[in-house]
Length: 129
Image (cartoon, rainbow, N blue to C red):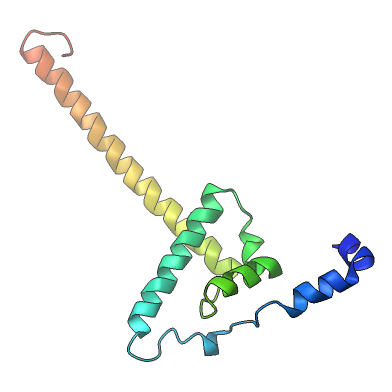
């Protein structure tokens, strides 16, 4: 950033001046009008996609505070407000807990199938089949 400021100050100014204006909660329209529920569902879905991106690509949670990322997101949907760092961390933690519980349940189910298969094989005289 220092190089950009010192060597190419006009390029930096052009980039900053062409950035879309910040969208705040008051201008988001999330719960306004007939599409309020639809918009809220869409923003929840976008939050879920953000959680997946951060987890899958090992992105830092602080990405939601990056100015350039904010510009990019507002360019895609000016009404969407990025969650705070704290809110994103909570959502990631919730998804982790849900995934952990689902995985445990699947492993227990698989384990019971294996036990049933083993006991069935011993009933027919066939070893483990």
